[in-house]
Image (cartoon, rainbow, N blue to C red; front, top):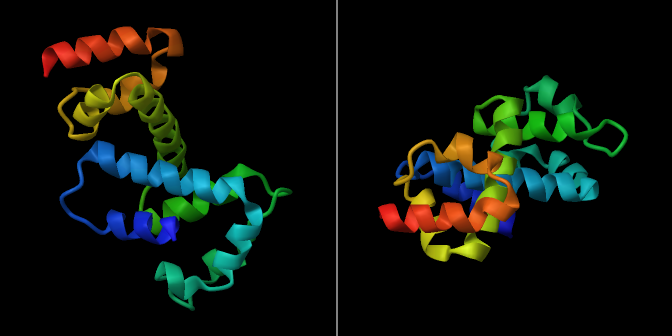
Length: 141
């Protein structure tokens, strides 16, 4: 159910880049977590809006043996970005979730796009410095 909500959110035009990255990151984390879920979804490509003629995507099999690159590739093809973007979105999602624990107000400002370079810089912030970063963000907004 949550996967459907996230996929539906990606269709919205009014998402900020930060919100879009969080949705992509959540999708990647969900599919990466349970390979059996991935295989079930691949058996029903129409749920993702894939064309039956897209042989390349149908041939991909998500399994633990193939590694995480396949999951990132599937999500990337669906969303229309590269695999590296999907992996960076996951790191950004984790950083925003950690910031949410420290300061919900600062996390909301990041998601609204009010913090410059948050997509690239927030995942690089060490966990012990998140409180300091949250105070700085709150001071600016």
